[in-house]
Image 1 (cartoon, one colour):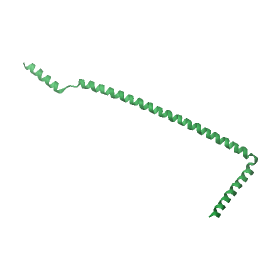
Image 2 (cartoon, helix red, strand yellow):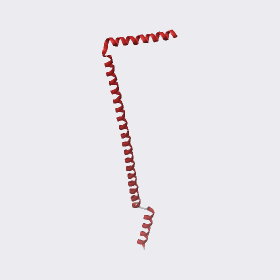
Image 3 (cartoon, rainbow, N blue to C red):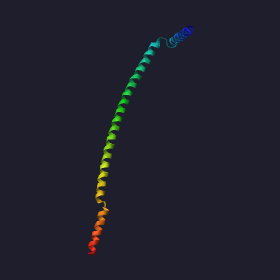
Length: 115
């Protein structure tokens, strides 16, 4: 087992050194410049990622605030509608004909007519 692990490590080291040698052949002296440029691009991407995350947080907070405002507005309108409905129901209740009272009045009217 230990020999197998050593062989794997040696193969990995050989592969890494071969890759480094190939990089050196292909890129030569410019490898440091390329690495620097790649690092600059990486840093720029990370910076932009942070900016986007910040913008997303701002948009999320604004959306939550708008939802809260909308919820409050809807609750106010529902309360106003309930109050209006109650007022109209009260008006209808006042205008509604009381059958017992109407019957009694008709009986009294009938009695007065017959007298």
